[in-house]
Image (cartoon, rainbow, N blue to C red; front, side, top):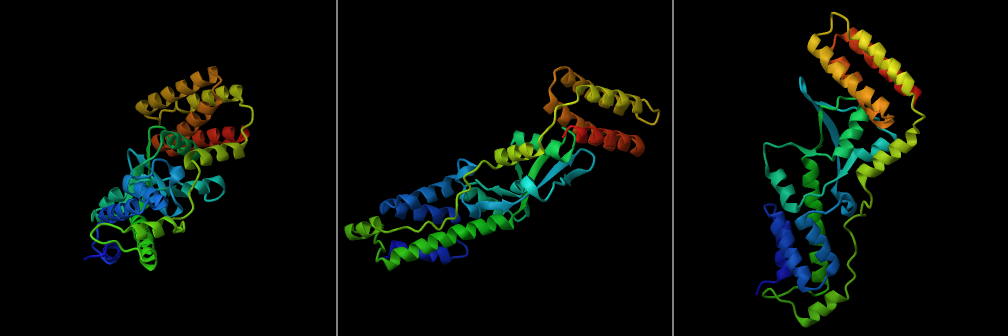
Length: 300
């Protein structure tokens, strides 16, 4: 008769094993033995983690962000490497085990891209000073998913070896009353890594905003800035279509000034500066960008 726990160990050592099947078998054993901690761990690995707060540390991936420039394609976003921005350099992977394995098995895929929350998109647009029309995604290497799979497999193997050491093997897909009793009194060492326990997006954004300490907004200064930009883009060297696009953005900012919406004004001005650099001639675009940058520094 085959021993269920030994079968599980053999599957862990099989380089061609299906990680989804491995977790399902381990889940079956954990349920049979009423080991609730292991059951909960495997359930989340099989179904995916509901929130980033519940993700263990080994599922954190080193990530980077890119913006899709309509003319140049995906370009890296440069963010400060220190301070509160460090929180955005790692990201909890909530994907189910089957989703991870599907991505790993895709030979044409070396880098994984993921859609990010709108709140973070807006934050990065403002922080990196890029146009609102740019799409932003998060990227990380596939090797980090391989690491997650191997960590899960090693955890299951360690657990199966501990069961064997306690004399819990199982036979014909059943466990004896004695084996169940031993399992019930077993202390399962939580080797699944510390839980993140925080909202990555919220904590990073809030701490950054708090650290910046925004001063009282200079609405009159913002109006004067827009007037000077309007004069700059009247130059014959600026394409008429580009001028119309910039004027549309300026009108939006003007509306926000009348509404006293300082947060939106700062974001829109950042976008206007980068946009002007990308679609107008270099001298005028740089001049607009520098004027906006100088103004924003006075209110931060």
